[in-house]
Image 1 (tube, rainbow, N blue to C red):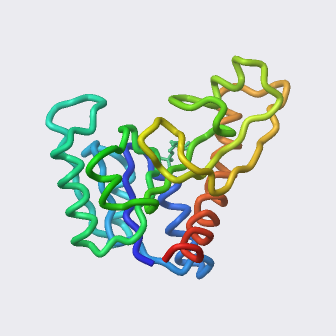
Image 2 (tube, helix red, strand yellow):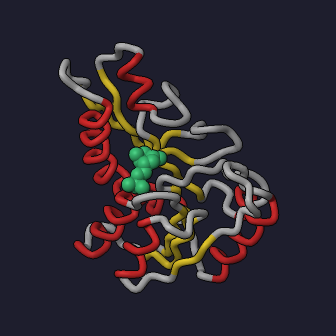
Image 3 (cartoon, protein in one colour):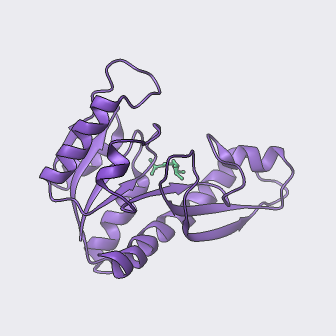
Length: 191
Ligand code: GRF
C-alpha cells in the first residue's frame, strides 16, 4: 500500500506511521510527503528517511487551498503511485478536485472525540468546556471540516491538573498508535 502524507507542521504522526512500517506492523510505504509550509519539520523528517517530498504552492493564500493547488497535489500524488492519502496536521480544507481524485481514500487524524470539537486546538476546547474526557479520531475526509465517517476513535481522560499542553501530549501518544491502526483497517477493507 503506497501512502501519501500531507502535513503543515511537526509531522509526529507521519513519524509514527513510518515507525510502524519500519517495525513491520504496517504493510505499506510512504511514497510522497507534501507540505504547504516549506519550513515544516515534517519535510525534514521525511527527507531523513529518503522519502520524496514537495511543497504545495497555495498561491499566497494563508488558509485557503486553491483549486489549482489541489489539482497539482492530486497529480503529484498520482505520479508517486499513492493509493491512500493521510492528512497529518494539514491545516487546509481538502475539497474538489483532490477529494474526487481520491474518493474514500483520504484520511485525517483529529485530536477530539468527533463529532465533538471540530476545528483548531480541540483539546483546549474540551478542557475549556469542562469535559471529563477528550480523545482522538481517525476519519475519512469529506467536504466538511473534521466530518466524514469515523474509522477509529479512542478516548483520553482529562485529569484535574491537566493543562492544554499536558492533555495534548497525552492525546498525541494515543494518536501515534491510532493512525497506523486505522491505516491497517482501511487497507484491509478497501485496497
Ligand atoms: C495532531 O494533534 C493531529 O491530531 C492534528 O494536528 C496535529 C498534528 O501533529 N490534526 P503532528 O504534525 O503529526 O505532530
